[in-house]
Image 1 (cartoon, rainbow, N blue to C red):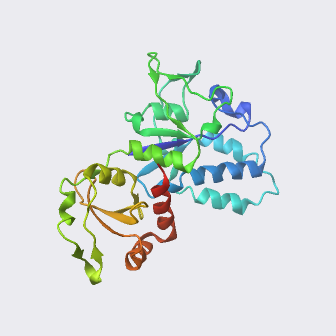
Image 2: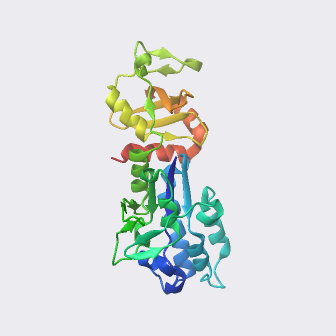
Image 3: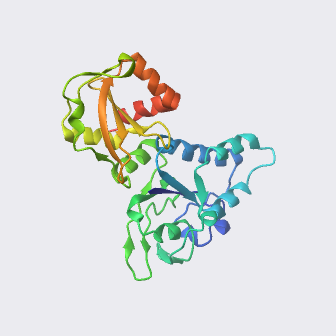
Length: 281
């Protein structure tokens, strides 16, 4: 399981508390500023919304930001943004444990970083957004009480960066079926007469495609990756084993019937993510 911890800047120095050791303090906050913050976070998570990723935030800072919402603010717009964070929970509501840390020289008992530090699988986690950090610091020196320094990964709130982080650190990693070439014998005719092309890629390249393939929706077994150079779509099928293991076949990216099936599985959102993942190096 991968986890993202969403960093929000502090509304005021008072609301930041000890976290001012690393958080940016906004001072003057407008409703428009708050809406822009949420829009930025939402967009950065666009490529991974259907992935097995859990996201958390620190409710204290969110409440402090909301207290700055102006009376004449169009609240429906803000509420719509909040409703898109359906898979995000507060560290307080989730009851995550805390570990005492010294962050940038200041001792902090609880908060987003403390909850992250209490996990036994921190290497698969990341923090977003880099711009929420104190601009004078732009780095986090987090240490346990023992003095051990922790490797904190902080990402910018940029969709490509968040997606590449997941591709490189997905937990558990996807596994390509050792018999991935079973579709390479001959070109096959699938259901309704659809031609299934032979798999002619070397294993290493298919493994890279698998890492970058996107799911239609959470819970569905298929993953999709588009090879722009060869104008093909590689479709991976989860074999429902104890580890996420996949076999695959390829189809032409111009196959209207196959494209229709893909659209039925995930609509325009899936099509856009397939195109984006193909262009991210």
